[in-house]
Amino acid sequence: MKNLSLADNKVLTMSSREIAELTGKTHSNVKRDISAMILQLNYPDRRLQDCPTFDPSELKGHGITIGTYEHCGNLYDIFDLDKRYTELLITGYSVALRLKVLDRLAELEGKQAPQLPQSFAEALQLAADQAKQLELAAPKVAFVDNFVERESLQNATQVAQSLGLKSARALNAILDDIGGVYNGAVKRGRVFTVKFINSGYGELKQTDAGYPQSLFTTKGIVHINELLISEGYI
Image (tube, rainbow, N blue to C red):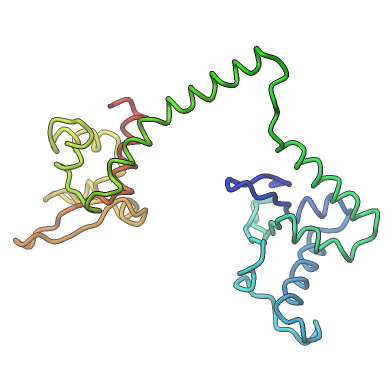
């Protein structure tokens, strides 16, 4: 279950399921309250009963996202609200219920506050940990920086050269071993898989002779670099 959490972008969120648990309401009732809130925000001059049925597109501009969760083999809708809209939602709830939700928000905000070292030894350890993280990230950062000003599409020979490999054949042998890059069902030439293309890692172009040519995007080159590092090839 997704509870109150910090997303990757550090935005504090609370799920409709946790709000239901904290307030003792059913999840369906909380989702109904959220839908009514969204409708009232989008149609402030109309009575709620006259508003159209809630449409997920009406979440645009609000700090609310909608997803799904699995329970007993079935999928159900779930909302995630940022702090502002969590507080807005519970405005109409009783004082006791509002207090429970606000206390939970404060609890997580306290957890996300940076913990300062309490001793010289802890400060040294923190500095060492940060230095290690920078050291691990350095190859990736340097690799990305080398590509930001380059042509966006590159062939296997150019990518192999960038990665310090002997040839396109050496690169392709590694990619064949890892899998997921080229479509093995295509015997003539090397053609990217649909998933690889849809991920934005490569494009399929046509040469002057009319043959398909697989070209890596900047995003794809970075992905291949990370893939080869994680698999121990470079």
